[in-house]
Picture 1: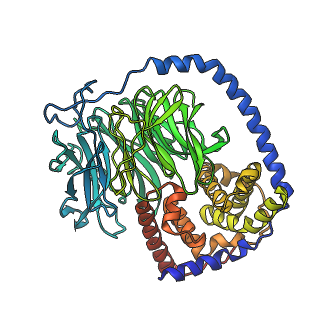
Picture 2: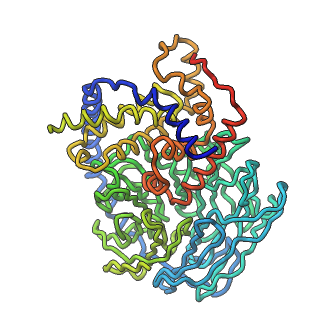
Picture 3: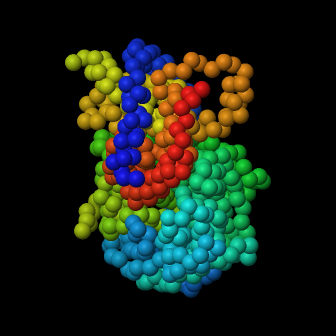
Length: 428
Length: 170
């Protein structure tokens, strides 16, 4: 079936609806006025709560520690990374998957230099036969040296296919090491599940002890439940939470136990609690009620490693997106970290924050907005190539930050230990 | 042109398109109208600023899509309750478009996972290119292409293997 045929079918299908006579505009006005009144009431309440909680919030931020970094003396086993060594300096590295998934690249975030290429694994065997693989996703531990890459079959088969996990370590100079298949006692050759090659999100704890993977399961091409699987890498112990069909993305860890993710709104999953029902996870910020300073919508949530705050992108117009800090304890907005800007097509998100929330990285298509937050003032950091559309690792509480820009697929990175107040345009 | 007049013109010109898009996502025309009205109400609240945009309909489309996705999730979660209530009351008289969800295309759309459905709808119904969808949805273009390809493949298979058109609007 040609694209044009499908487009024509859609056009035919929608024609009667597009001709529907809208209700009088007074219906919309009344609805808007009712909504404004509700928001005004909520804002008054929020201001009162914020005023009361301001002192406490300031104390929490002031008491937090500066970001830390470490250099690995040797290659520890995955899941047994040493604790971050504050003060040790090292170049932050990140890994980005190519747009077609055929390879992954390693980059030095301080200067944008490409350090190596990792081809996707050769043919794999599974119950559906032999197949070539492509990288699907990548996650980073906090040491900037340890990465987990997920690979799956490059096939149009509608059957469920396995997802394989590989560990990849960088040498001290950033040279990529070989891919090592992760095998777990309970699973074959890194096989995570039997669902249809869709990894919706992946996150490694800062210490590299646990890997969380979100997938949208499909059975016979019908909508299936969403899963979050947490694997303790040292032992292979696995727990799975399952929800009703929904889209889950943007996983991030607070410590080794709390997982934040986009669930329409922002949800928090206590992975130490009993149960396997993802619908029982705490809905910290409902999408439908999240408004702040005229901004609404929630995108790209990221929880700080200490579990105190969640950063989300919100908008007050098309392409007018800023960044808001929410309390991860109360789910209430605390402050606008980056003011929204009116540039069409922008999107913005946070990929990293140190435990204090004072150093963070946000990506916005309207410009580089990485940097530090001090007393609510945002100081931009640097902007680096390479062109690396596709999945990019983030720092999981370490010093590495990388993300995508939407308009030009430019990859940006920032190292919070050497923040720059100047924006560096290093395109090309 | 007064603000109210410009909003009314915008509203009347775009209401049907937003309803069609929301119906394609939700598979329920009445819910889609509610979504569209909520999106336009939000647009009305900020029309003094929104009206100056080159493409205010892009804003409404984004908002409507998000409400639709959120609404669809709530709908699925409360499916049992809705089914129980529906069994106890007589449904409304059929209106224009009620049967659309039961056409071949409507049925096929409803079987698509939401992540594929939204990009398929934006591409084939709203005529947005991949890059524009990526911007609107905050997704990498590669992800949009992947979802679009999967959605198209699934639609084709549905339309090829289930050729009978359902015409009973119930």
